[in-house]
Image 1 (spheres, helix red, strand yellow):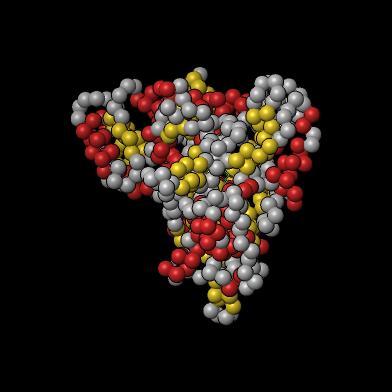
Image 2 (cartoon, rainbow, N blue to C red; image 1 turned 45 degrees about the vertical axis):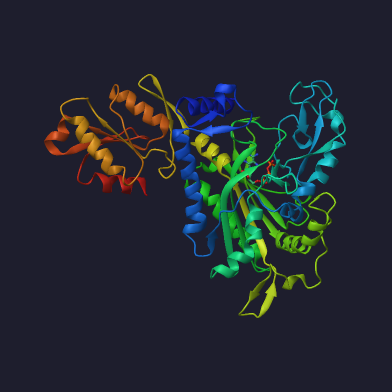
Amino acid sequence: MARITKLEDIVSLCKRRGFIYQSSEIYGGLASCYDYGPLGVELKRNVRDAWWKRVVRMRDDVVGLDCSIFMHPLVWKASGHADKFADLVTVCKKCNTRTRVDHLTDHVEEHTEHVAIETAMADAQNLDKKVCPACQTVGRFTEPMAFKLMFETQMGANVDDTMTLFLRPETAQGIFVNFRNVLDSTRVKVPFGIAQIGKSFRNEVTTKAFIFRTREFEQAELEFFCEPGTDEEWYEHWKQARFDWYLNLGIKKENLRFRDHDPDELAHYAKACVDVEYKFPFGSGDWQELEGIANRTDFDLRQHQRGMRTLNSWYETKGDLGSIKLKEEAEDYHKGPLSFFDEQAKRRYIPYVIEPSAGIDRSTLAFLVDAYDEEEVRGETRNLLRFHPELAPTKVAVFPLVKKDGLPEIARNISDDLKKHFTCFYDQKGAVGRRYRRQDEAGTPFCITVDGQTKEDNTVTVRDRDSMEQIRVGTDGLKAYLLEKLGI
Ligand code: ATP
């Protein structure tokens, strides 16, 4: 029960302190859309940067990419999204609420892949025992039907050349369609990965729990291409690397776990799939997916080779995706345009792909929840966010103890100097105790106070957010001290 209250506390703190607001709030809000405020934008940027640093910059075998959101419609035919990216839904006959069939349980389950319509179909046989999550009526549901999740839009100004496009529902396909470009324009060789962070869009049936599931969200995806036969090793490698990423950024071990997909949950082409799950404080305090890691075999590249062969039909049918049939694979598909030639082994093949796919918003929520803490200090409740220094939106706050005696000028100079190295916030308003509390709530690891003694011996107090301990540090060595403590 305590954990349910905790999400409400977080939503309230996020609004109060400028982390996250409801979108278009002055117009009554737009369901399932959120805006990141001044602290939130820094936090989210730090989450994104921490992913990019570990997945791309600190490795020799991964390169980055930033694709456009709009892509050729045939991409989505080849990937399977145009035909299959749908949730099986049903409508409650009593209250008219539309719900995902796989969400119709006593407590919301998050486990079924969108593409696993067949699995959901099997579940749908027993709808008469299911409860409507909105009005609690049992067993009064319409026949389940597929609900398409991709947003459509029109591109082009002229009536004749207007084309229906989709807002991408994942960033991964942009990587697959650039596989050849990256091979030809860089010195990468299999095994190697291509990473991308960007917005994705899904017209989700049920949205819930703040930024956990929204219709516009940001994904961080890696497609790691490897030789068939080495895929199981790379799968294990990425499984561990991604789990450790969360732990190293401060997520408590007891709140993180792996959940292997059951064979009947796996997409037909996937050899293995595991979710990294976090114990989110909603629903019944259930474990929920943070990230999926899948062994996708050579499915995607082979599908895009088929897509390339289908291009003529695309023109013939004037782009009607519904009537286009994807061409069969060439017999020697393994030598196709999206194959890789291993010069040492003198062998050509389509690489297998290991895909860690994470949500930036969803992990931002997990970092917020995990960092949130309340403690009693001298009869008062102290709310704080114990962010890992790398994620903290503001690294250091600088205060003059009082607004006179030249202290603000000294504090400003210190703050201006530190700003060259990390985010630093200057504040001279109100009692110093309240200024500390505000920074605790923002998750700022260190506060520096300039006081009368500073003028005498050039030292300032440095207060640690977590222990509230204060020590005096010389202004000369302050920057080095903070950089070391922050580990950045
Ligand atoms: P679900 O079954 O929960 O709808 P999924 O298994 O289809 O999700 P993936 O397609 O594997 O999700 O997406 C990879 C990651 O992208 C997820 O683990 C999650 O972190 C993030 N993600 C997916 N959909 C959303 C969404 N609607 N809002 C926020 N993040 C999302």
